[in-house]
Length: 278
Image 1 (cartoon, rainbow, N blue to C red):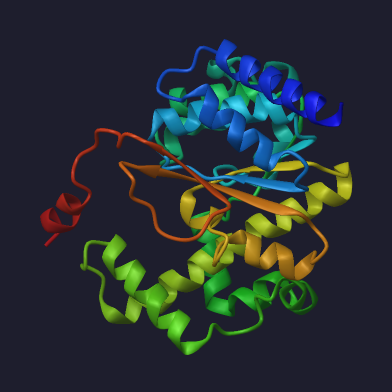
Image 2: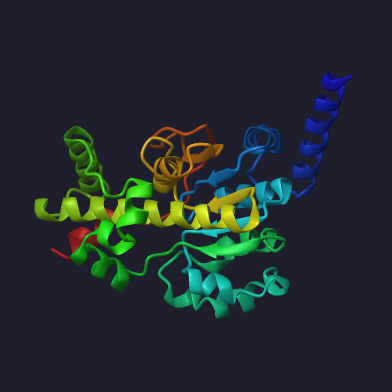
């Protein structure tokens, strides 16, 4: 009987996801993802920021999982608090409220279905603005967090030498081998700061809502091996954390609990910007 109920629940989930009429996001894959993420205290939904299929999947998973809170990489805590839950499905209003056109993120139409699907949840922002990040790096990420919080999330500990070197190599590659060597440790520190900020926002969301919590973020922060999950697990070792990575044409870096693939979005060669600046 229990097995039959489990099968029926899986079929019902697949039907809900299929009914959303997603383009390029297969209901079977999404049902499997929902099954894995259901029951997690924190479900981290990764993305490539400008991939529409990735955002369709995130919206479908939010609709299926019905989290009590959603944490956003793309907005600050203050912006999240200013959002009106009743208007999250109104793309124009949300984009204006967040001043999205000036944010530097891809066009809001990509994120609109994700915000609409989140309207039943409490919203949390984890963005560290560039000016604030610069100040944090001047005083040190641990000092920015405060000694107690930094120790709780593990931000007060330097990375092992091998991992630091690997991360600097990744930063060099992701910036088209155009960054001076002295900038690489700074970029690694910024990534760690943002990981810890996401973890702190998820931690607060869990404390205030009881969870479950969903996190909308890029694949780099969603990585189970070095992203926000590492810092959140340090602060909440009892928390059940699951991460979804979303690859393009089979390409993705890092470890995840599940990876779903999609065709790569059409975009200009990002390395052209570095070549044109030389």
